[in-house]
Image 1 (cartoon, rainbow, N blue to C red):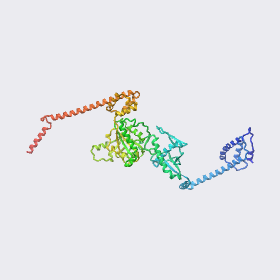
Image 2: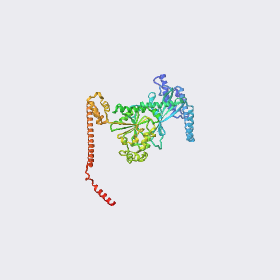
Image 3: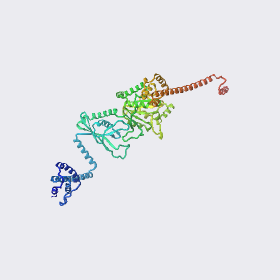
Image 4: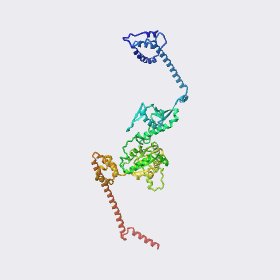
Length: 593
């Protein structure tokens, strides 16, 4: 009766509402009262008191611009009330059963039941799933990096929610899937789904190296009927595409082992930065004939996979760059990296503690890379080896601790870091050097005579490149790079003087470049200043060579005069030892008699 009375009560409205207005206000009223029906409890202990919901409806009906005289409206709310009451009771029973199951059933039994449920679900599922984690045990998963690089090229056009990253000093923006996002890929007419899964890593009590806070991985979903058709070929396609993208689009990287043997959270002992050195073989101040020979050798190496496989050799090559400081050894390494599109690993031997750490660094290098040890004569001390050589030892034991290549300690270091000569030789041409392919070893030194002959033999350092002083062809390259001049822009007399003086001056390309940089605003002045500097250096070299020749000639003349005086001395002017010798002879004769 109360419900009917409340429904028949009509408010006195100052205006008449439109039927469409009531049609739009009814859903709004329902959405407003829907949470109220859940939060309030309905007491039915006495029929004398109306339910709270009916009372609220009655109060609200006086303020709404339409009358709640339709009995079906109240019947709807009454039905919803009973529904939510039953649902709340059911949820309470389920919560009680869940807590009861956790108490009665052990975790092992619950895990077994969950495993059986997953098997039943997979049995009726039409998809199969493949997880590709970022870290496999303690090693980095190469397939994860390949998938990430492959998807970075396809999500830029197919993805709806992307993550954009750009490394420091990098020129490229990398696209990637957001956390727990999916993307659809098509291969040979078959659709596959990639999902980027990111979860928080559980706290570990002990770990021999720091681990990332998040566990990252990709999940590949393929229909079961397509699994045998495309799985292997599709993964090979992903790896090939990733390598192609890495060669073409990715910036070159420069690695260094400045961690001192420690690993990062992903197990890498190397730190990397984008490599953007502008040096090329076109800008390298070097004899064109020798430059062309080096370029052909590098090209043959990069395209020689089948050759090295046929001959049974490891796909690697060694180069030794030696010469005075400032002749362009570092620029040569940068030009080689840019020519082959290889990464560079700058190995600092003073940060290597032992042979085992040196081997680990080698194992963590990638293919298509250049491993560089600059100024190797300054990085290690071969005094013990020289000492053994001076003592004329017949046998050489490279494993002897006395034959140790001790790292030169820097300021504030104790000098305890050392590697044996055997470890250094095996690093360049041992069994561990073949762990990987298409790698180049480059050593640089200013004094080749200080290096051990075992380190310089073919197989370790296959090609020796002498970086000499600036020659006339190299000078023309520098003039073209810094001033834009070639032989046609220079006066014939000036060109002749430069050709005559440059070889006698023995100036490095670095010294000549500095003269051109200082005067690059006025090109004629730069040429005259360069010619003057070359003449000054040539005269100084001639003077020094003349003084040395005079000193040598004076020493030779003194030796000749001493020999001449010794030969021309009279017999009676013997030495002070002649008379005692004669007396001794006389005494000996008397004793014999």
